[in-house]
Each structure stands twice: as structure tokens, then as C-alpha cells.
Length: 446
Image 1: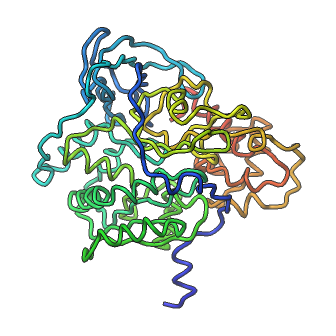
Image 2: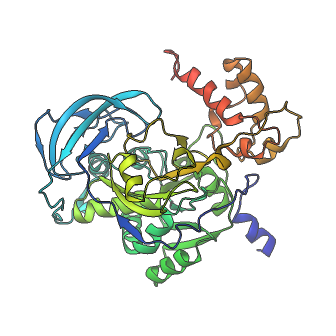
Image 3: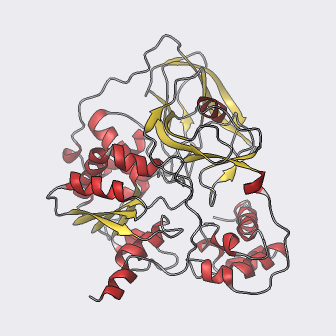
């Protein structure tokens, strides 16, 4: 293979190159946030059907105890992030400003908040349906931000087979370094989780894809892999949205997932590094998904940090631990700056999909004057899915939502590359989200 061919295989067409802004937290070890008094656990922290509460107000809880069972197959369980008691079950404010069902827990101030490790589960003796049920019971979801139930990915039809496990360590969103630090500080757990998935899925090999702005993580992972021949680390050039699973597959394998199909149709399963670590934690120690690593950063954050945060912790408390917000802060975003969303209140909780809490000042949030589309084509050049974002924007403004479906609207992953590239400051991805929400709200839409 020529050098040009080798380089081509490690990238994908289109995409954008936003500034990384990772220097504030990239070298900061993960710290643990102190336990606070109250926690709110929304029952819809994942894509799919909300969980169903199995506890009552006034009931005592121990840390890690199940508080809500899966509401269906496309759903996951919830567990108490602390030892304490249930003080409320009802509607609580969500990140988008709406009120959704949740369980409020008051922590016991005298509890140690430790979870006693359980004997390792004999996952090798489990049938595949039993393994899938275990992952669902553990409440594990995609930790990259989408919060897709992990067990659904592992439910492979009999007509398909997984040949490759692709571990997503790209972390292409600006500011975020939580995956980077996880690879640096818990490489053994990452490799252990990868081995579990390899053997249970019957896959031949696994690849951990990491962008080349993380050379220290790449070196540590390769050192821990040692002589293993079925797991390798692939270095990827920095580009956004490299972390989107279809783009990652194109970069690593030079294969395209056709529209309407899934990675498993190509024999590939993609998981974020946080998800794989959570798999190792559940099967080796019995630790369900009750906490996650969150990056706190941005020009408005007093003291940026990488933190282990119990789920349900109010964003306000996390920011207080980091010294609060600077006076010039104008917006707090949950997730990354490209795909994250501003939070309606600092009292909303950290969720399973919360990868970052970013504080931005007026300099970052100021929107420039919007001008008419000049048909320059930059949004087309930026879109990694080869869609026509400018057309979507025009149709959305005309409220021709049904016509948008004919141009593959639902193939858009809302990565924001089009808005980033637009010289006319047109909020293209916001218009696309409006159209999708309108279509999804219709009772006859699947």
C-alpha cells in the first residue's frame, strides 16, 4: 500500500477543524467531586423508553441499588448514586427546560458512600441473551453523549455476526478531555472491557481509535496491550466529527455504512471508551453506572477540571466545586460546544450522557449578524454525510418539513459542521433540529 493510500484510510472526507481548546484540562488528573445533599435521577436518561420507578417516597437506599427498572427493551435501569432515602418522585426540570419524571434522593450525611466490590460475574458462562440482560440491568449506555442503551447494540440478530469491535477514543469535540484522561488513568479497565466484548461477541479483533493529539494516551494503551495480537491502537488525524461512529468506521476501515444501515450490517460494533470501562466495572466488581467522568472547562469556568461525578448531582454543585463561574459567563453548555446544548438552569442534574459542563462568556456566545445564503457551498464541503444543509435550512424556514425527509433529513446527526462553516452565520443545525422535532412530535411518525 502506498503512503497516500495509508493516509487516506485514516481519515474521512469533508468535516471541519475547530480549535481544540483542550489545554486547560488535558493534563489534569481525574478528581472526585464531594457528595452533596440531594440528587435528582431523571427516568429518561437514555434514548428510548423511560425507566419505571421501583422505589417509594421515604424508602431507604444503599448506593448502587436499583431504583428504576427498564421500561422496555429499548430502555435501561437506574441505580441510586448515593446511600440515602427517596424524598420525591415526580416531574423535575430537565436540561432543555421541560419537566420530566425523576426520582429525588437525599444523601445520608453519615454514610461512607462506598460500594463493596462484588465477586466477578461469570460472563463467559452466560448465554448471549443473559449477557445482554446483565448490561441492561447495569444501566450502561453510550457514554459519548448520545446515551444509546448499550445492550441494544449487543443484541445481534442471528443473521449477522460481529467481526470487529471498534473502541471510540477520538474525542473530537473541543474542550472535552474526559475520554483522554480515562484512557490515561484506566487503561487496564479499558482493555479488560474490550476483551469481554471481543469474546462474548465472537469478534476476531478490536481496534481503539485515538486522535493524534493524544500521544500520551496512545503510548500508555500500547504499553498495556503488550503482546496482544487481537487488540490494537490506531492513530487518527484530528478532524471533526471523527467521533461519529460512521466517520470513525470510514477513517479506520475505509468502509462506508450506507444510509439506512447500521455498523453491525458491516460486522462492526462501535463503543465509546467510557462505555467499555463501564462494562469492565460491572462484570468485575458489580459497579453499575452511577457516576461518570465529566470535563468542566471553558473561559467562564474559574478552575477547569476532569471530575468523577455521581449521576444526579446538580450542575450548580459541580461548578461550585470548581470555584463557580466568572462574572462574565453568559452560557453553560452540557456536552461539547459543537453538539451540546445550553442548560436551562444550573439546578439540572448530571446525566449518563453528560460528557462536559462548559462555561462560555459573551465572546464565545455572541452570534454574528446573519446574512442571506450566498450558495458558496461551504456547508456541503463540511457535511461528512454528503447532505445539502443549505437546502435543509431553506425548507425548514418555509416549514416544508415533509419535503425535507425526501432529501434524507434523518441521516443528519446534527454534528454542527455546517453551521461552523457557514460564512453567513445561518443557524443551519438549529433549523434542522426544529424540523426533526416537528416531525417526531407527530403521532403517526415512527
